[in-house]
Length: 379
Image (cartoon, rainbow, N blue to C red; front, side, top):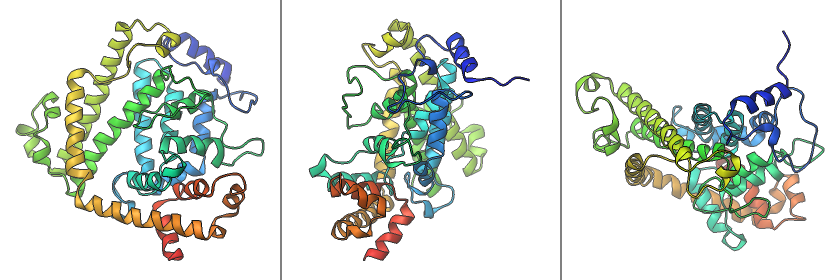
């Protein structure tokens, strides 16, 4: 039986994907041109390059919300990323978009995260305030463009324009402006769906981990309006007979299904309302295409406020933030005083880069446990 080659896959995409989907054969290419692979499309190769990168593997030991050594079942940055990729593929498939592109963007979107979660990012942002600050999306692009060194022919992973654009246009409070990417154009729909899949994933798994940790009270959480969408109220009936773990798992399944299904229906409706007929009309849509329905958006906002007040600001996590701050600040100071501690490659970067940026690159790439170990060594 003959193999399906790249040309056959690209032909299938042209015939079966939506007219506003991003086709691999129409990619704007790579910064360093190279021959196409005979069997895999450009976006499939991007996905594979990310998975095989050192930065991807290190996410296994980087904090999502809870420190990895607090328990074997809490999410890490890597398991969060895998969940985002799974949700992204589901959304893309149902909207007839490019699953390979959505998956590649999902897998790459958190490569630039520091150890100790957002607490670590906040510390580096403050330490680099005189150098433009620190943002994990900017760092993700730096990782794939410069810091990953796996090829003799070029720096970085040499990912396609569309995946790199998905990093740049990932929605955060910090907007990235680079001449290479049109700031007036909306991202691909695949990239937009990864943004919302990211939120779906962390809302659901933070509920899961928060209840599992004992920080969140299940009965108090059930007072939120988002549970009103359930077919059967979670406060009585069969639900009350379930074991505590079963209740938690049911809540998480409900959240993921509710948010993902709502996004699919609302995005589909938006495509029709806005007259999106191709990628060009998508790029210049007058308003956001991928989103929750207005009704669910209010309930998701209420859930996020609840998580912020009851989970992210809990004393246990505040203590972790203080510990992360101590480690990150000490490492930054000690490495600045003794740059000879830096690995040879980072010492070479000091010839062309500001010392603060090189130190931040090194610290941002650390796992939690490596940062803690090095902290103990430089004291």
